View 1 (cartoon, helix red, strand yellow):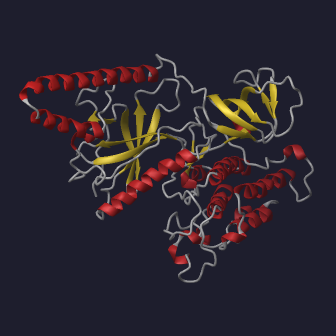
View 2 (cartoon, helix red, strand yellow):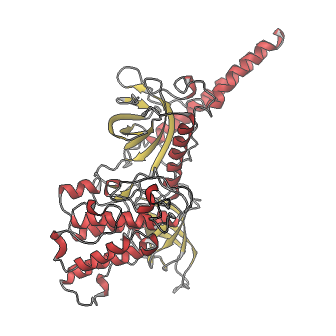
View 3 (tube, helix red, strand yellow):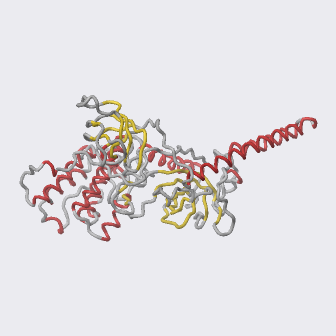
Length: 504
């Protein structure tokens, strides 16, 4: 095992790594401070997820390539399902630690509120609190499924909270599948939350699983067992790889216990075809438990105003952006044509230990691999030409390098000033991001509900996002679901993000 040496180091001339949060089989998680972040951003503290292919002793070239591809797929999945209740990717890169070990990394938002497993251990959640969190998880998971991504590891430990503990976000898409597939199943997830189709033991070889195909119902199984934890405060360990058939003694006498058990039992059937087939159906059933609890009996509920949303609503925390960063393209050592992965030389930036070496306040752009590989070729070419031409060629190459460095310094200075708030951030007014209105919404002239309405967005209308601020979005109505009631109503304005579903 070879752990990365990153503590108290500056990564990519930007991220000051402060502490190790955890370590998995092939990844290490760090908390870092973004020294270029604007004082107004909530992402001044971030998470670095570093892929360390040397953590185990079983590395070979094929395994390394698989690990790197999976790491890149995690980034792609996060970008595809970008949502207020799914953890956001903020960046990526490749670097070397103080021991010259090469690693790829993802930059993720930091959620300091802990996970829901810890929240349940510290204090039992009320039914209202549990359903408040479940609605957000359902909103994020439904969005992921709609975009062709199956998480495969839903559990309370992967449901993280913001600092104020009002917003929950789904994390760890490291084993996610980006399409429904009949390819061989690999065992993933924690045993007590994973459905039978996640295990090769039940994949058809033994005949114990009639329908091994992976579908969104796999996540619904894990979601139901997570709901068991949030509502009852106890682990479903007794129901590993089997349906939930009873509730703990602490909740069996509740008015809503029988209804809850029916929902959880259906959602955890061994045959995935017998479960709820989409998250919205599961949410509609489990959210109705709240109505039973509020009435105190099993009589028919008639107060429509108190009914939960039929479609789970997102909860938007400050700072969420629907726009994804640049797509990563990680390389393996074989792709980089290196004899030794540990001898990358100048091809990847070396982290700088804080307090022992000077750290430039304005980060210099690191030369790209192609540029570094080209420089020796230029030198060889210069030495091969006649002497009378060498002087001119040397001068020309020096001139080109000087201009490139000068442009890089100007660009880095611009990034630094903008990150420090000296220069304003400019939103892209021509974003192609689209959304669907979840209900009828009032259009506002600015991002505040204190302004008079200037128009109305009807439920299921198609919108284009052109700007955003906090949890407000400036939209243009592309297509009305119903004809406009007032022809003078505006077709562009601001809406609250919790009332729209942002599309891929």
